[in-house]
Length: 276
Image (cartoon, rainbow, N blue to C red):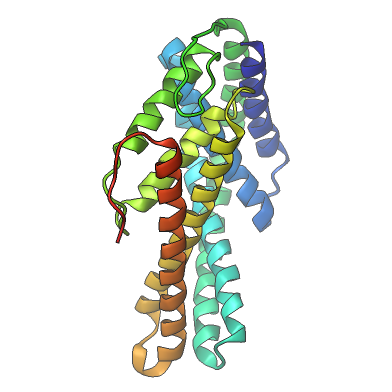
C-alpha cells in the first residue's frame, strides 16, 4: 500500500540524513539515533528483499559495519550511565576504577566508529538513495485479507509475510533463560520495525513489543556491565560494588522475563513454559 511504501522510504531517507549530519565525534544521543535508524532500515530491507536481492544485499553490506561500530559505542554509553547510578549506593575507588575502564573503552570504540564512518559514510548514503528510488519504482502495493494476533488484515503482502514469519519464530521460542532471551529481543525488535510500516498494525501489540524490547535490553545492559566488572574487580576488594551490580542484574532479568512472558501469553500462539 502507498502508506507502507512511504514509511519505508521515510526510514531510508532518515538514515541517509543521519549519516550526513553526524559529527566526527558524535555524542551519545546521536550514536543511539544512528544505531536505531540503521536497525530499522535493516528490518525494512529484510521485508523488501524478495523484490530484488541485489539491491538489498548492496545496502545491507554498506550499513551493517556502521551499525556494528555504533553499537560498540552505544553499549559503553549505556554502561557508563548505569555505573554512575551506583554512586548513591557504593562509595570508594571501586566505582571510580570501573568508570575509568568504561570511559577508556568508550574512547576506543568511538575511534573505531570514526574510522568506519570515514571509509563507508559516502557509499552508504549513495546506496540508501538508490534504495529509496528502488522502493518507489519496484514495490507494487497489494492486499492480503488474513489476520493473525493483531497483525494487519490488509497490508502489503511482503510486510504481512515477513511479520507472520517473525511471529512464528517468536511463538516457537524455547523457554526463556539467560542464554536465549537476548536473541528473542532482537526478533521482537525486528517485528516491531516491520509492523511500523503499516498503519493498520495493532497498537497494543506494538506497545507490548516495545515493553518487552526495553525490559530485556535493560537486563542485557546490566549483564554486560557485570561481565566487565567481574573481569576488572575482585570480590575481596570490591565486593560491595560487585554484589550491587549482580543484584540489580537479577532484578532486571526477572522484569525481562515478566515482559517477555506477557508478550507470548497475549499475542503468540505456541504454548510455552515459564522461564527460570
